[in-house]
Image (cartoon, rainbow, N blue to C red; front, side):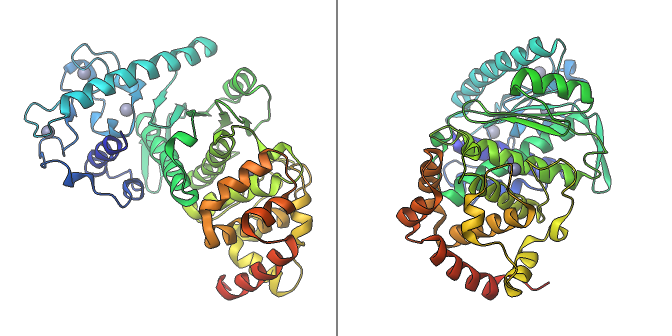
Length: 391
Ligand SMILES: [Zn+2]
Ligand SMILES: [Zn+2]
Ligand SMILES: [Zn+2]
Ligand SMILES: [Zn+2]
């Protein structure tokens, strides 16, 4: 199944210049060695449906979504936007399409549940690992203004990128994150309020998330929250990482426990920096007051703190809960995660499991990484001074 996703993404990549980030998703494997190349469908087994019922909708983007509401209703392609490539050399092309229709039907049923709750049609659908709602009608990305449909596919691409990177860095199998994460980006504060109440069981003006099994995140994407696309992108990456970590088995939110906040926030911030270069998301402080701590460039800022011996101690950071984690402490938490990934990212899931089971961070670190907080502090500081940029 993984192979198919990669194939369909390749169609996207060649057909749509806006999806700049697909390249990373494609990863190291090259699936095309498995099949004879088909130039009619880029070896995906599927081509865009040409039924006139689709009007001007650009179906060349459909490759990264299982369900997209913008495709509309069509008997020819069963609303998938794609039909079998009739000149195909892939022996499994028809099987792929049949499986796709099954996934599409299941995704549609789930999407309709959301529409029933919200009492209206919603722009969105599903990618391989996310349920997505995208309400913003148009937005500037770089120099280009994209419409709602293009933005939805870009959103899908970006969230799948977090998922792919998560699996890669923590060396996790796909099945270890059992549920699709739902992510909703609204335009009207009223819709976000409504969705947050219905699906997340709480509310806050900027963003709300339900963690653990069937995670759900809702945010209001208005300009006053997110002045630029990059701001919104960063925020969504941060929150996608939270949802994935909380759903990763055992599916539970560690941030609720003392000793879990540093890992939860540190990892989410790590993905921001890894995928969008800067971090400035603060989940549990008075929202909006955080701003760009260290200008968002945390490696430089952390190095400065360590050099001046002004950094909060590791023991302090490990002991915080979500409500008391301060900005500099969150940046240190990011850097500790950065260090642990550099030693061995594949041990992070075992550490996460211990923290989800309320183990004290200190004991868990000793058992999994063989480092007490004090030992960690000393090797980590040395590593920061050796490897982090000065500007
Ligand atoms: Zn679409
Ligand atoms: Zn069609
Ligand atoms: Zn073909
Ligand atoms: Zn966070």
